[in-house]
Image 1 (tube, rainbow, N blue to C red):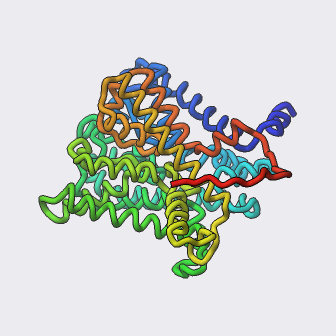
Image 2 (tube, helix red, strand yellow):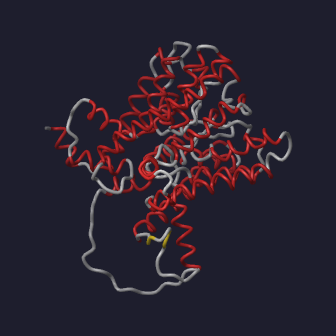
Image 3 (tube, rainbow, N blue to C red):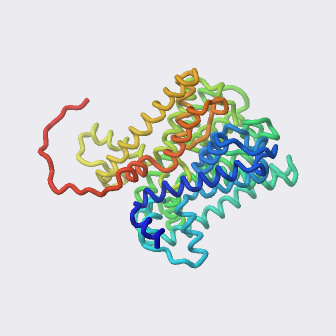
Length: 444
Protein backbone atom coordinates (compact mmCIF):
# COMPACT_ATOMS: atom_id res chain seq x y z
CA UNK A 1 0.00 0.00 0.00
CA UNK A 2 2.84 2.37 0.85
CA UNK A 3 4.55 1.72 -2.50
CA UNK A 4 1.25 2.15 -4.35
CA UNK A 5 0.69 5.54 -2.70
CA UNK A 6 4.19 6.64 -3.69
CA UNK A 7 3.62 5.54 -7.29
CA UNK A 8 0.43 7.60 -7.44
CA UNK A 9 2.24 10.71 -6.21
CA UNK A 10 5.06 10.35 -8.75
CA UNK A 11 4.74 10.99 -12.47
CA UNK A 12 5.80 8.31 -14.93
CA UNK A 13 8.80 10.46 -15.86
CA UNK A 14 9.94 10.62 -12.24
CA UNK A 15 9.56 6.86 -11.87
CA UNK A 16 11.66 6.30 -15.01
CA UNK A 17 14.43 8.50 -13.60
CA UNK A 18 14.31 6.81 -10.20
CA UNK A 19 14.44 3.45 -11.93
CA UNK A 20 17.63 4.36 -13.77
CA UNK A 21 19.17 5.79 -10.60
CA UNK A 22 18.29 2.64 -8.67
CA UNK A 23 19.91 0.32 -11.20
CA UNK A 24 23.00 2.54 -11.37
CA UNK A 25 23.28 2.44 -7.57
CA UNK A 26 22.90 -1.34 -7.53
CA UNK A 27 25.53 -1.70 -10.27
CA UNK A 28 27.90 0.59 -8.40
CA UNK A 29 27.65 -1.52 -5.25
CA UNK A 30 28.23 -4.76 -7.17
CA UNK A 31 31.26 -3.35 -9.00
CA UNK A 32 32.79 -2.24 -5.70
CA UNK A 33 32.88 -5.84 -4.49
CA UNK A 34 36.35 -7.48 -4.49
CA UNK A 35 35.03 -10.30 -6.71
CA UNK A 36 34.25 -7.78 -9.47
CA UNK A 37 37.87 -6.69 -9.97
CA UNK A 38 40.51 -8.97 -11.45
CA UNK A 39 43.02 -8.07 -8.72
CA UNK A 40 40.48 -8.91 -6.00
CA UNK A 41 40.80 -5.53 -4.28
CA UNK A 42 37.47 -4.00 -5.27
CA UNK A 43 36.89 -0.82 -7.28
CA UNK A 44 36.78 2.66 -5.83
CA UNK A 45 33.44 4.49 -5.60
CA UNK A 46 34.46 6.83 -8.42
CA UNK A 47 35.47 4.01 -10.79
CA UNK A 48 32.42 1.89 -9.96
CA UNK A 49 29.94 4.77 -10.28
CA UNK A 50 31.38 5.94 -13.59
CA UNK A 51 31.39 2.41 -15.05
CA UNK A 52 27.89 1.58 -13.80
CA UNK A 53 26.50 4.84 -15.20
CA UNK A 54 28.23 4.27 -18.54
CA UNK A 55 26.85 0.72 -18.72
CA UNK A 56 23.25 1.52 -17.70
CA UNK A 57 23.24 4.57 -19.99
CA UNK A 58 24.73 2.34 -22.76
CA UNK A 59 27.49 4.85 -23.39
CA UNK A 60 30.80 2.97 -23.36
CA UNK A 61 33.06 5.66 -21.94
CA UNK A 62 35.42 3.89 -19.53
CA UNK A 63 38.16 4.88 -17.13
CA UNK A 64 39.22 1.26 -16.58
CA UNK A 65 39.78 -1.20 -19.41
CA UNK A 66 36.91 -3.69 -19.24
CA UNK A 67 38.96 -6.78 -20.12
CA UNK A 68 42.07 -6.18 -18.02
CA UNK A 69 40.62 -4.49 -14.92
CA UNK A 70 37.30 -6.24 -14.29
CA UNK A 71 36.96 -9.94 -13.51
CA UNK A 72 34.56 -12.26 -15.34
CA UNK A 73 32.01 -11.55 -12.60
CA UNK A 74 32.52 -7.81 -13.08
CA UNK A 75 32.09 -8.20 -16.84
CA UNK A 76 28.85 -10.13 -16.30
CA UNK A 77 27.60 -7.32 -14.06
CA UNK A 78 28.51 -4.74 -16.71
CA UNK A 79 26.83 -6.76 -19.48
CA UNK A 80 23.67 -7.15 -17.36
CA UNK A 81 23.58 -3.41 -16.76
CA UNK A 82 24.00 -2.85 -20.50
CA UNK A 83 21.10 -5.19 -21.32
CA UNK A 84 18.79 -3.64 -18.71
CA UNK A 85 19.75 -0.08 -19.67
CA UNK A 86 19.53 -0.77 -23.39
CA UNK A 87 16.04 -2.24 -23.32
CA UNK A 88 14.87 0.21 -20.66
CA UNK A 89 14.38 -0.09 -16.91
CA UNK A 90 10.58 0.10 -17.04
CA UNK A 91 10.40 -2.26 -20.02
CA UNK A 92 12.59 -4.78 -18.23
CA UNK A 93 10.50 -4.58 -15.05
CA UNK A 94 7.28 -5.01 -17.04
CA UNK A 95 8.69 -8.06 -18.83
CA UNK A 96 9.60 -9.69 -15.51
CA UNK A 97 6.06 -8.99 -14.28
CA UNK A 98 4.64 -10.53 -17.47
CA UNK A 99 6.60 -13.79 -17.25
CA UNK A 100 5.76 -14.08 -13.55
CA UNK A 101 2.05 -13.90 -14.37
CA UNK A 102 1.35 -10.54 -12.77
CA UNK A 103 -1.20 -8.18 -14.30
CA UNK A 104 0.16 -4.93 -15.77
CA UNK A 105 -1.76 -2.00 -14.29
CA UNK A 106 -2.90 1.08 -16.22
CA UNK A 107 -0.22 3.17 -14.48
CA UNK A 108 2.46 0.70 -15.52
CA UNK A 109 1.15 0.73 -19.08
CA UNK A 110 1.38 4.52 -19.09
CA UNK A 111 4.98 4.34 -17.87
CA UNK A 112 5.78 1.81 -20.59
CA UNK A 113 4.34 4.14 -23.20
CA UNK A 114 6.58 6.99 -22.01
CA UNK A 115 9.58 4.69 -21.67
CA UNK A 116 9.57 3.36 -25.24
CA UNK A 117 8.10 6.50 -26.88
CA UNK A 118 5.04 4.60 -28.09
CA UNK A 119 2.26 6.49 -29.89
CA UNK A 120 -0.59 4.94 -27.90
CA UNK A 121 -1.16 2.95 -24.75
CA UNK A 122 -3.18 0.27 -26.53
CA UNK A 123 -1.17 -2.88 -27.25
CA UNK A 124 1.74 -1.71 -25.09
CA UNK A 125 2.04 -5.06 -23.27
CA UNK A 126 2.27 -6.97 -26.56
CA UNK A 127 4.86 -4.43 -27.68
CA UNK A 128 6.94 -5.23 -24.59
CA UNK A 129 6.94 -8.91 -25.49
CA UNK A 130 7.88 -8.03 -29.07
CA UNK A 131 10.83 -5.94 -27.84
CA UNK A 132 12.32 -8.78 -25.82
CA UNK A 133 11.68 -11.38 -28.52
CA UNK A 134 13.28 -9.19 -31.18
CA UNK A 135 16.26 -8.31 -28.99
CA UNK A 136 16.90 -11.96 -28.13
CA UNK A 137 16.73 -13.13 -31.76
CA UNK A 138 19.00 -10.35 -33.05
CA UNK A 139 21.56 -10.69 -30.24
CA UNK A 140 21.75 -14.48 -30.64
CA UNK A 141 22.12 -14.12 -34.41
CA UNK A 142 24.92 -11.59 -33.96
CA UNK A 143 26.74 -13.83 -31.48
CA UNK A 144 26.51 -16.83 -33.83
CA UNK A 145 27.83 -14.79 -36.77
CA UNK A 146 30.86 -13.61 -34.77
CA UNK A 147 31.52 -16.99 -33.18
CA UNK A 148 33.87 -18.35 -35.94
CA UNK A 149 36.02 -15.20 -35.91
CA UNK A 150 36.48 -15.09 -32.13
CA UNK A 151 36.76 -18.86 -31.54
CA UNK A 152 39.35 -19.28 -34.30
CA UNK A 153 41.51 -16.69 -32.57
CA UNK A 154 40.83 -17.23 -28.87
CA UNK A 155 39.40 -20.74 -28.54
CA UNK A 156 36.48 -21.39 -26.18
CA UNK A 157 36.86 -17.90 -24.69
CA UNK A 158 35.58 -16.67 -28.04
CA UNK A 159 32.06 -17.82 -27.06
CA UNK A 160 31.96 -15.29 -24.22
CA UNK A 161 33.49 -12.63 -26.46
CA UNK A 162 30.84 -13.22 -29.13
CA UNK A 163 27.99 -12.96 -26.61
CA UNK A 164 29.45 -9.89 -24.90
CA UNK A 165 30.12 -7.93 -28.09
CA UNK A 166 26.79 -8.90 -29.65
CA UNK A 167 24.76 -7.58 -26.70
CA UNK A 168 27.01 -4.53 -26.35
CA UNK A 169 26.65 -3.72 -30.07
CA UNK A 170 22.87 -4.22 -30.25
CA UNK A 171 22.38 -2.08 -27.15
CA UNK A 172 24.68 0.54 -28.72
CA UNK A 173 26.87 0.39 -25.60
CA UNK A 174 30.38 0.21 -27.04
CA UNK A 175 31.90 -1.81 -24.19
CA UNK A 176 34.48 -4.35 -25.37
CA UNK A 177 36.65 -7.06 -23.81
CA UNK A 178 39.51 -6.92 -26.32
CA UNK A 179 41.95 -5.21 -23.94
CA UNK A 180 43.79 -8.35 -22.84
CA UNK A 181 44.18 -9.49 -26.46
CA UNK A 182 45.02 -6.36 -28.46
CA UNK A 183 45.95 -3.87 -25.73
CA UNK A 184 44.03 -1.82 -23.17
CA UNK A 185 41.38 0.57 -24.58
CA UNK A 186 41.99 -0.86 -28.07
CA UNK A 187 38.30 -1.51 -28.86
CA UNK A 188 38.05 -3.41 -32.18
CA UNK A 189 41.12 -1.88 -33.83
CA UNK A 190 42.80 -5.28 -33.99
CA UNK A 191 39.91 -6.66 -36.06
CA UNK A 192 39.38 -3.70 -38.38
CA UNK A 193 39.58 -5.78 -41.59
CA UNK A 194 37.78 -8.92 -40.40
CA UNK A 195 34.37 -8.95 -42.13
CA UNK A 196 33.01 -11.55 -39.67
CA UNK A 197 33.36 -8.99 -36.89
CA UNK A 198 33.05 -5.61 -38.60
CA UNK A 199 29.89 -6.42 -40.59
CA UNK A 200 27.90 -8.16 -37.78
CA UNK A 201 28.80 -5.43 -35.28
CA UNK A 202 27.80 -2.74 -37.78
CA UNK A 203 24.46 -4.45 -38.47
CA UNK A 204 23.81 -4.91 -34.76
CA UNK A 205 24.43 -1.22 -34.13
CA UNK A 206 22.08 -0.22 -36.94
CA UNK A 207 19.29 -2.64 -35.96
CA UNK A 208 19.47 -1.55 -32.34
CA UNK A 209 19.48 2.10 -33.31
CA UNK A 210 16.45 2.29 -35.62
CA UNK A 211 14.01 1.56 -32.79
CA UNK A 212 11.56 -1.19 -31.94
CA UNK A 213 8.58 0.77 -33.27
CA UNK A 214 10.25 0.78 -36.68
CA UNK A 215 10.99 -2.94 -36.35
CA UNK A 216 7.31 -3.52 -35.58
CA UNK A 217 6.43 -1.75 -38.84
CA UNK A 218 8.99 -3.80 -40.76
CA UNK A 219 7.69 -7.11 -39.44
CA UNK A 220 4.04 -6.24 -40.05
CA UNK A 221 4.32 -4.54 -43.46
CA UNK A 222 7.50 -6.16 -44.83
CA UNK A 223 8.61 -4.30 -47.96
CA UNK A 224 5.40 -2.25 -48.37
CA UNK A 225 7.08 1.08 -47.63
CA UNK A 226 3.90 3.08 -48.27
CA UNK A 227 2.14 1.22 -45.45
CA UNK A 228 4.71 2.29 -42.86
CA UNK A 229 3.95 4.94 -40.28
CA UNK A 230 5.38 8.36 -41.02
CA UNK A 231 7.85 7.97 -38.15
CA UNK A 232 9.20 4.71 -39.56
CA UNK A 233 9.63 6.27 -42.99
CA UNK A 234 11.49 9.23 -41.49
CA UNK A 235 13.71 6.94 -39.38
CA UNK A 236 14.68 4.68 -42.29
CA UNK A 237 15.35 7.44 -44.80
CA UNK A 238 17.27 9.62 -42.34
CA UNK A 239 19.30 6.64 -41.11
CA UNK A 240 20.22 5.68 -44.67
CA UNK A 241 21.38 9.23 -45.46
CA UNK A 242 23.39 9.43 -42.23
CA UNK A 243 25.13 6.19 -43.15
CA UNK A 244 25.88 6.81 -46.82
CA UNK A 245 27.00 10.45 -46.72
CA UNK A 246 29.47 10.15 -43.78
CA UNK A 247 30.88 6.91 -45.24
CA UNK A 248 31.66 8.68 -48.53
CA UNK A 249 33.13 11.72 -46.73
CA UNK A 250 35.39 9.56 -44.57
CA UNK A 251 36.37 7.38 -47.54
CA UNK A 252 37.54 10.28 -49.67
CA UNK A 253 38.74 12.74 -47.02
CA UNK A 254 40.17 10.68 -44.13
CA UNK A 255 40.98 7.22 -45.48
CA UNK A 256 42.20 8.23 -48.92
CA UNK A 257 45.13 5.80 -49.19
CA UNK A 258 45.62 2.06 -48.94
CA UNK A 259 43.61 -0.92 -50.23
CA UNK A 260 40.05 -0.02 -51.22
CA UNK A 261 38.54 -2.87 -49.14
CA UNK A 262 40.32 -1.70 -45.99
CA UNK A 263 39.37 1.93 -46.62
CA UNK A 264 35.73 0.95 -47.16
CA UNK A 265 35.59 -1.06 -43.92
CA UNK A 266 37.18 1.76 -41.94
CA UNK A 267 34.94 4.44 -43.46
CA UNK A 268 31.71 2.46 -43.04
CA UNK A 269 32.41 1.45 -39.45
CA UNK A 270 33.47 4.95 -38.36
CA UNK A 271 30.25 6.27 -39.95
CA UNK A 272 28.10 3.69 -38.14
CA UNK A 273 29.65 3.75 -34.66
CA UNK A 274 29.13 7.47 -33.79
CA UNK A 275 25.39 6.77 -33.91
CA UNK A 276 25.82 6.07 -30.15
CA UNK A 277 27.63 2.70 -30.43
CA UNK A 278 31.13 3.58 -29.18
CA UNK A 279 33.24 0.90 -30.84
CA UNK A 280 36.07 1.97 -33.11
CA UNK A 281 38.29 0.11 -35.58
CA UNK A 282 40.72 2.98 -36.16
CA UNK A 283 42.73 5.45 -34.08
CA UNK A 284 40.44 8.46 -33.80
CA UNK A 285 43.23 10.76 -32.62
CA UNK A 286 44.76 10.81 -36.11
CA UNK A 287 41.58 12.12 -37.74
CA UNK A 288 41.67 15.65 -39.06
CA UNK A 289 39.74 18.43 -37.34
CA UNK A 290 37.05 18.08 -40.00
CA UNK A 291 36.79 14.33 -39.40
CA UNK A 292 36.45 14.79 -35.65
CA UNK A 293 33.80 17.47 -36.15
CA UNK A 294 31.86 15.10 -38.41
CA UNK A 295 31.91 12.45 -35.68
CA UNK A 296 30.75 15.01 -33.08
CA UNK A 297 27.75 15.92 -35.25
CA UNK A 298 26.87 12.25 -35.75
CA UNK A 299 27.23 11.57 -32.01
CA UNK A 300 24.85 14.39 -31.12
CA UNK A 301 22.26 13.19 -33.68
CA UNK A 302 22.37 9.61 -32.38
CA UNK A 303 19.80 6.93 -33.14
CA UNK A 304 16.01 6.86 -33.31
CA UNK A 305 13.14 7.05 -30.78
CA UNK A 306 12.25 3.89 -28.89
CA UNK A 307 15.65 2.33 -29.60
CA UNK A 308 18.71 1.32 -27.59
CA UNK A 309 20.52 4.40 -28.92
CA UNK A 310 20.84 7.90 -27.47
CA UNK A 311 21.36 11.33 -28.98
CA UNK A 312 18.76 13.90 -29.91
CA UNK A 313 17.41 11.33 -32.44
CA UNK A 314 17.06 11.11 -36.21
CA UNK A 315 13.44 12.25 -36.10
CA UNK A 316 14.46 15.45 -34.29
CA UNK A 317 16.90 16.27 -37.08
CA UNK A 318 14.31 15.45 -39.76
CA UNK A 319 11.65 17.65 -38.12
CA UNK A 320 14.06 20.59 -37.80
CA UNK A 321 15.18 20.31 -41.42
CA UNK A 322 11.59 20.01 -42.60
CA UNK A 323 10.65 23.05 -40.53
CA UNK A 324 13.49 25.05 -42.11
CA UNK A 325 12.38 23.88 -45.56
CA UNK A 326 8.83 25.02 -44.77
CA UNK A 327 10.13 28.51 -43.89
CA UNK A 328 12.25 28.68 -47.05
CA UNK A 329 9.30 27.67 -49.22
CA UNK A 330 6.92 29.99 -47.30
CA UNK A 331 4.51 27.19 -46.47
CA UNK A 332 2.17 27.19 -43.47
CA UNK A 333 2.68 23.65 -42.18
CA UNK A 334 5.55 21.21 -41.80
CA UNK A 335 4.89 18.10 -43.87
CA UNK A 336 6.75 14.82 -44.31
CA UNK A 337 5.67 11.91 -46.51
CA UNK A 338 2.24 13.41 -47.13
CA UNK A 339 1.49 13.97 -43.45
CA UNK A 340 1.43 17.17 -41.39
CA UNK A 341 3.71 17.31 -38.35
CA UNK A 342 2.03 18.51 -35.16
CA UNK A 343 3.24 21.79 -33.63
CA UNK A 344 4.16 20.12 -30.35
CA UNK A 345 6.69 17.87 -32.10
CA UNK A 346 8.33 20.92 -33.72
CA UNK A 347 8.63 22.71 -30.36
CA UNK A 348 10.06 19.58 -28.72
CA UNK A 349 12.59 19.19 -31.55
CA UNK A 350 13.75 22.79 -31.18
CA UNK A 351 14.06 22.38 -27.39
CA UNK A 352 16.10 19.18 -27.73
CA UNK A 353 18.36 20.80 -30.30
CA UNK A 354 19.15 23.68 -27.95
CA UNK A 355 19.81 21.25 -25.07
CA UNK A 356 22.13 19.04 -27.11
CA UNK A 357 23.93 22.10 -28.44
CA UNK A 358 24.48 23.99 -25.18
CA UNK A 359 25.05 21.25 -22.57
CA UNK A 360 28.05 19.52 -24.23
CA UNK A 361 29.59 22.91 -25.01
CA UNK A 362 29.16 24.04 -21.41
CA UNK A 363 30.56 20.75 -20.12
CA UNK A 364 33.51 20.96 -22.52
CA UNK A 365 34.31 24.50 -21.36
CA UNK A 366 34.36 23.41 -17.70
CA UNK A 367 36.48 20.32 -18.42
CA UNK A 368 38.88 22.37 -20.55
CA UNK A 369 39.38 24.90 -17.76
CA UNK A 370 39.57 22.25 -15.06
CA UNK A 371 41.97 19.88 -16.84
CA UNK A 372 43.93 22.29 -19.05
CA UNK A 373 42.84 20.42 -22.19
CA UNK A 374 41.91 21.84 -25.62
CA UNK A 375 38.23 22.72 -25.94
CA UNK A 376 37.95 20.61 -29.11
CA UNK A 377 39.17 17.46 -27.33
CA UNK A 378 36.90 18.14 -24.35
CA UNK A 379 33.93 18.72 -26.67
CA UNK A 380 34.53 15.33 -28.29
CA UNK A 381 34.25 13.64 -24.89
CA UNK A 382 31.18 15.59 -23.75
CA UNK A 383 29.40 15.01 -27.08
CA UNK A 384 30.21 11.32 -26.72
CA UNK A 385 28.77 11.33 -23.19
CA UNK A 386 25.50 13.16 -23.88
CA UNK A 387 25.02 11.18 -27.09
CA UNK A 388 25.65 7.97 -25.06
CA UNK A 389 28.25 6.99 -27.65
CA UNK A 390 31.45 6.06 -25.86
CA UNK A 391 33.99 7.16 -28.45
CA UNK A 392 36.99 8.86 -26.90
CA UNK A 393 40.21 10.58 -27.87
CA UNK A 394 41.84 8.85 -24.92
CA UNK A 395 41.50 11.58 -22.29
CA UNK A 396 38.63 10.16 -20.21
CA UNK A 397 40.76 7.77 -18.07
CA UNK A 398 42.99 10.65 -16.94
CA UNK A 399 40.19 13.06 -15.98
CA UNK A 400 39.76 14.30 -12.40
CA UNK A 401 36.71 13.84 -10.18
CA UNK A 402 34.89 17.03 -11.25
CA UNK A 403 35.29 16.23 -14.94
CA UNK A 404 34.14 12.66 -14.36
CA UNK A 405 31.02 13.91 -12.59
CA UNK A 406 30.25 16.17 -15.55
CA UNK A 407 30.48 13.19 -17.92
CA UNK A 408 28.31 11.10 -15.56
CA UNK A 409 25.59 13.78 -15.57
CA UNK A 410 25.77 14.11 -19.36
CA UNK A 411 25.53 10.33 -19.82
CA UNK A 412 22.50 10.19 -17.54
CA UNK A 413 20.89 13.12 -19.33
CA UNK A 414 21.52 11.52 -22.71
CA UNK A 415 20.03 8.14 -21.79
CA UNK A 416 17.02 9.27 -19.79
CA UNK A 417 16.24 12.11 -22.19
CA UNK A 418 16.20 15.86 -21.79
CA UNK A 419 12.44 16.24 -21.97
CA UNK A 420 11.94 13.40 -19.47
CA UNK A 421 14.13 15.23 -16.96
CA UNK A 422 12.33 18.53 -17.55
CA UNK A 423 8.87 16.97 -17.22
CA UNK A 424 9.98 15.10 -14.09
CA UNK A 425 11.32 18.29 -12.51
CA UNK A 426 8.23 20.36 -13.26
CA UNK A 427 5.66 17.57 -12.73
CA UNK A 428 2.61 19.59 -13.55
CA UNK A 429 0.09 19.47 -16.35
CA UNK A 430 -1.00 23.02 -16.88
CA UNK A 431 -3.55 23.85 -19.54
CA UNK A 432 -3.87 27.42 -20.71
CA UNK A 433 -7.50 28.48 -20.56
CA UNK A 434 -6.85 32.01 -21.77
CA UNK A 435 -4.36 33.31 -24.31
CA UNK A 436 -2.22 36.43 -24.16
CA UNK A 437 -2.45 39.15 -26.82
CA UNK A 438 -0.22 38.62 -29.84
CA UNK A 439 2.56 41.05 -30.66
CA UNK A 440 5.02 40.68 -33.51
CA UNK A 441 8.75 40.21 -32.97
CA UNK A 442 11.24 40.18 -35.82
CA UNK A 443 13.77 37.32 -35.97
CA UNK A 444 16.66 36.74 -38.34
